[in-house]
Each structure stands twice: as C-alpha cells, then as structure tokens.
Image 1 (cartoon, rainbow, N blue to C red):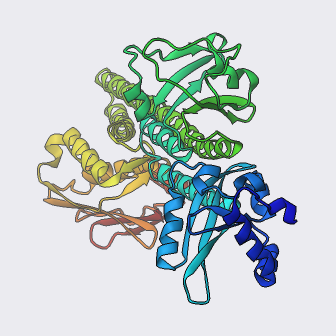
Image 2: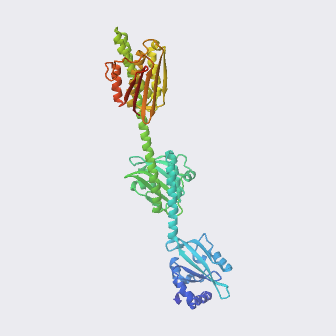
Image 3: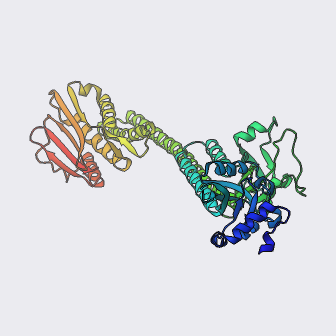
Length: 517
C-alpha cells in the first residue's frame, strides 16, 4: 500500500500521505468510504486518492498525486480548482453536482468538498467525496420526458377536432422536444408502402433548410439512408452521420446539415403508415427515444384514424341524406301525378257519385304527397313537424272546397311537435278523412260553422282533437261498424297507430284520438 502512494519527487505529497497513514482513524475512515475520495493540499494539489477514485475516473495513482484537478480531469463547464480555493478560504463545506468523464463515459456526480482542520481550526487540507448519481438522473430525466409525452398526448386529445395538419405539426414539435432534437419531419406511406408523402417539417427544419422547392412525394426505393427504416421495417439510429455508409446518397444543395439522425416507422397492425424522423441531438439517440416517439405517434395515429372514419361516415350519411331527400321528392311528384290523373278522370265522368269518389281519393293522395313534401323540405327525414303539416293540409283542403267553406271558420291549437314517419302518414289520412267529412256534412244546413283542431303531448301520449259545432252525426250510425269508406279507413288507421278513438256527439261532433308519442 505504501508503495502505491509513495511519490519520491514530491516531498509535500509524501509528507501529507505519511500523515494520513500515521493517523489510523482518518486512514481507516477513507478505506471505509465506498466511493471516490480525493485529498487536496493548500495549493489545490492531489495528495491522496482512494482506489475507488482511481477506478472510477481511470486514473494512475502515482501520476495523479501532486497535480491539480484541472490537470488530471478535464471538464469544460466547471472551474473546479476555484471551488477548492473557496473552501480553503471560507472553511465551509460546499455541495454541488457535476458531469465528469468516467470509465462508463460522461456521468453525473454529486460531490461534497469538506475542509480538514488542524487543532487551531486552520484549514490544512480538503477532502472531496463523489457519488455517482447517473442512474438517479436517468430516472429523473425519464420521469420528465414521460410527463412531457403524457402532456402532449392530453393536448392532442384536446385538439382532436382540429385538422390533420395542425395535429401532425403539433405532434412533430413535441417529438423534437421530447428527444432533445433540433430538426424533425413526419411522412405518410401509401397503401402499397412504396411512396412516402412528406407531410410536416419542424419549425427549425423549415428555417434551416434553404431548398426552395421541397419535394412532397418520394419513392421508397429511391431514398437513401433515411428510407432504410421502411425497407428494414424497424427503427434506424445513425449517431455518426459523417461516417461513411453504403446507403448514403448525399444531400441536395442548401439542405440542413445532419450530425445525428433517427427514423422510426409507425405501424397499424402489420402495415407501416407513418415514418418519423428526428436529427441533431447533442447526445446519442437511444431506444428510449424510439419508445417515446412510438408511444406519442401511435396515439396520434389513433386520432387520425378516428377522424378518417368519422369523415367517411359523415360523407356516407350525407350521401344517404341526399338520396333519401331525392326519394321523398320523387314520391311526392309521383303522387302529384296520380292526383292530377284523378282530376282528369273526374272531368270525364258524368256520374255525381263517381266524381265524388274520385275527389275523395284525390284529397287522400294529396295528404300523403304533402307528408313527403314536408320531409323533402326538412333537415330530418325521419320526422314531420305535425303543427306545420296540419296547417298546410287544412288550408289545402279548404281551398279545394272553396265556395262551400265561406261561412266556416277554422281554429287551430297546435303545439310544436315532431312525429315519426311511420305514424305521420296514417295520422295525415285520419285528419284528411275527418276534416273533409266535417266540411262536407257538418254544416249542410247553411249555418255558420267553427272547426277546431288541436294536438299536443302529455305524459308520453299525443292527443289529436277534431271538433265542430255542426249538425252532428245521425243517431243510428255506429262509428266502429259503418259502411262508409271514410270511417272504415279512419278505424283501420287508428288500429295501425295502436291508438284509441273517442267520439262525442252531444254538441256537434268531437273526435279524440290518443296514441303513443
């Protein structure tokens, strides 16, 4: 042991080393410390270092003794000698962190500079103890990066309604930040995986690259090293881009200078859908960088996939809406043609009863055509605005009767309500039959008349009431067992609606129809 620390050409170092050996307590204390320790004299020269210090920093013990810190360990960003002098002068300990070259490369250390005082409290020497905290720093850095990525994913989720360019630009800037890179880009692959479509460049890339007309599409087979991640279907890390490589094809003039580069393919199942690239990180790229990029861009791809699916469904729904609108339009037109044919047929029939039957059929066809007309004009093809429909239907029917309705008033109490198509057509025919029947028979004695129609909803039930102050129904007519076509049709339609039909003939007539909303 003495031979290891003997320095014959430096009497000061030898004397202090001898003092340490003579002081059994200090000597054995140093041996017990399981980390690098240095002892410096008042000239800030090394007088002693433990075996751990020699191993950690790959130092020759004999060569280190008698030299200053700056002579044995070069570190660009720290003036360590001045820190030693400060402790000598102040007599106060100093604690800090530093990055130093070690046998494992640059490592993080926590250190404490401790003054060693004589009996009269004067600082004779100082002791510097180092602890390698690289694993702790790595954990802290990983937590920081994970937090940054998680924040980016939450921001992407909040931006999921934005357009694709905004999403990809945001994600690209985040992977550049997370990997501590300077530049980056994102591209998409076509279905055959043989063409790359360049989609986003990072802001620094755009500033540094002076190429005026940047290509957008690249054939994978013609790409150089940056396309190798597609061909090999795995990430490619190039930490020394200046080194010769068989796949390198050089840069176009005014291209960004690249020192380090990494490509990461993003998969959807077995298929590559995106290629991300980052470059010019100060430190080497590692698999941790690959994992961070993959996690964030997989999340981005899930958002883009959902957006594409939503857009497809939206476009498909829009096409179906247009088709359905066209169907309602054509059905309405066809029914109007049928109604016109019935009108022409009516003109050629001499029989009053025949004309009457054709007229009634014509109003029924019109009432159904009007449903399709309202649906064609509506934004919702599955429901009909009942209040709007009843108003239009009654105006049309009264216009048909013209002179016969001059002394008849119409009172409408219609709540705004939408009814399903499957209920709208039978309800339209019921209203047509009862309203037409009232106009024809309720005021046959020439009296002034009032017809009231109301519709509303309560407790999940729709109630339609059609009443008048006319002559009323003959006492001998059974509404549910009648020979008249109109009332037979009403009863059939009421059953189709699964509704109830109530009749009150005390003061004119009053029909109440109740069915589920």
